[in-house]
Image (cartoon, rainbow, N blue to C red; front, side):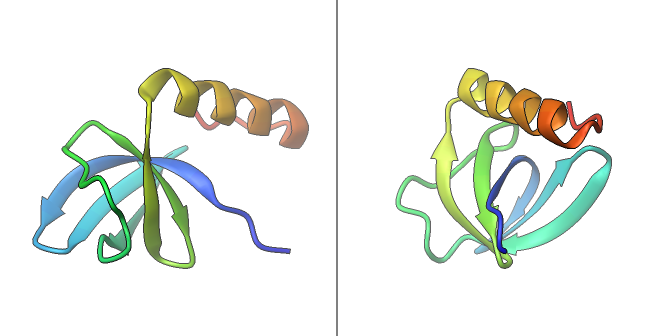
Length: 75
């Protein structure tokens, strides 16, 4: 099963971004995203690509649902 997860953008370098969630950092591609993010924004990440930009409140609410279901801390 694959899961897309909200991650916070820490740094942008051209068409790549460094993102983070729960202390895990990853570099993702921004080629597929229609609304280009800024540092501090949240993006939905799947398979190494940012798919869409998310409202901060919506991202945090989604991460809290993941926390409850998985019994881990992400925010």
